[in-house]
Length: 77
Image: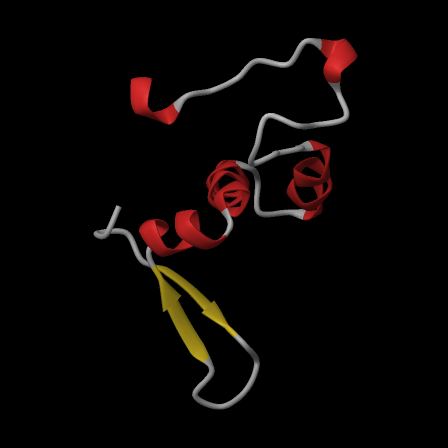
């Protein structure tokens, strides 16, 4: 959780920001899953459209109860 480093650029001079999965998980857990899946998709316009089909919720509450979604527990993987 501390070896991998995600890099992003704000667009300003000296605006390169670094974060580890541990920091991202503490702030926004759904963002870590979203970044992981986005890295597996093609780096084209198709990949940009496909990532919009992914819905990730941090807690047990979500608006898709009728679809019987699966719960993933990261401690058991």
